[in-house]
Amino acid sequence: MSSLKKGLYVLPSMFTAGNLAAGFISVLLSIGDKLNAAAWFIILAILFDMSDGRVARLTKTMSKFGMEFDSLCDLVSFGVAPAVLMYQLVLNSMGNVGIAIAVIFVIASATRLAKFNVKAMEPADKNKSHSDTFSGLPTPASAGLIASFVLSYEIVDGTVLNFKTIPLLMKKMPFFFNAMPVIMLLLAFLMVSTVPYGAFKHIKWTRPKSIQVFFLAVVFVALICTYPQNTIFIIFLLYILSGFVVLLVRGYKIRKAMAKIKKENEK
Image (cartoon, rainbow, N blue to C red; front, side):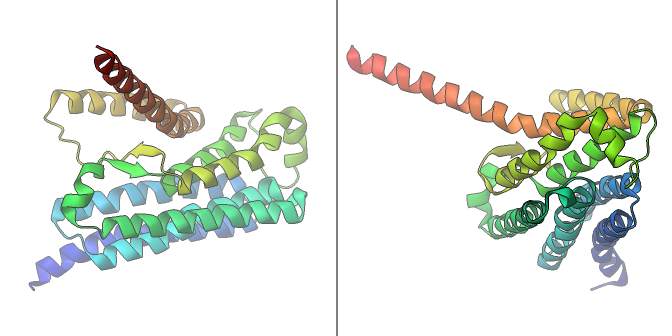
């Protein structure tokens, strides 16, 4: 194997290592009471995670090592890091129940990643029909919602989250603090569920629909630059809700098809 080819194989792993580094730094920042910065590093880890797979496909350097390395890094960045962040923010006031919720979230993340790896090892023809969808909520999406939830507090009177300001924000926005443990359990359930979510791995930008997606992406980037906390939260929330929309559409189509068959049988 030429040195150039070896370098290309290393390139995706460098992005994956960046994902791991960002996730680990997020954990350290959460422990050090720098919760806003911890949330931003989770977002940074998501950007690295979005890049490594695309770089691997672009350079045709996908490998079993890369897949395993990516999953191990994802567990730290999108399982452990958001769980520690939420524990420092909300769950530590709930005693053993808070610890249990954080542990459940991490276990669900690990289960989701293991399930993804098993599915990725299936024969290409068997896995082809699901190449553009994920079975269950991807871990970066669940971590992204949690991180963006934390960042949304940054816009409340310009308050930076730490141990001293949390009680003040809990009085101002009690609903969000009370809802977050439930949301974490819901995210854990979605990760191990079979709810379908878009993968967006094989978008061909020359197609008309892809151009529309590209235009929407540009709009979202502009909004992120202008209103980062709000827009990031909305993006992740819409993505998570999209799974339920797909389920409703599928259910409607199935009922419609069954009604048509029943009507034809009655003739």
